[in-house]
Image (cartoon, rainbow, N blue to C red; front, side, top):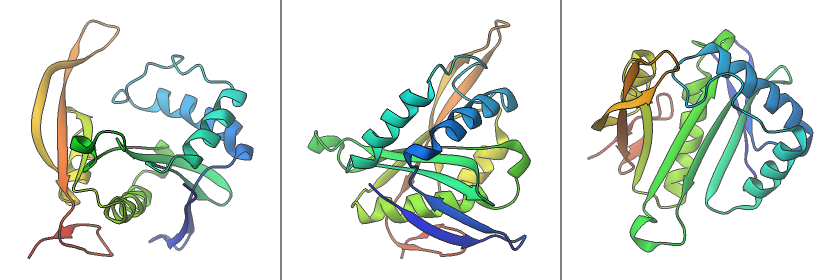
Length: 195
């Protein structure tokens, strides 16, 4: 699914949220490899991401033509600084009402409001798809992300003890968070208000 939207960030820069193109493949591979070194809260260890530029091009084409996936990149000054994805199961009616959301942003751009704009884009799209729930998983130690998700109306609905195991043998619990997509969206915060 093709997507394009522009936002003005609080620092005055223009953020473009759009579907990736084949020409973005190399920059996206480089971004994933960078981000994997910047946070211990992601699902991969540095070096586990093995996609080539050609693999990424194939994935871009596949996801951009899927009706049940919104895959977007965040672009500032022609640089890709983040990625977000929402997908839902369009083959099984019992699961058609819920989407799964994931996001990452490079560390140098944290605190600029990029995550909020990506989230808002994905909430709007999810509502257009008639989804009722948006779900995600987050490491319990990632308090910054948990607070961010809560600010949009997500709630912790369950926890998997030792859901993530690090190479040093330590564990982290993993929360499942859910947001109900009913009500009106506040265009500034993305929070959904029910009446």
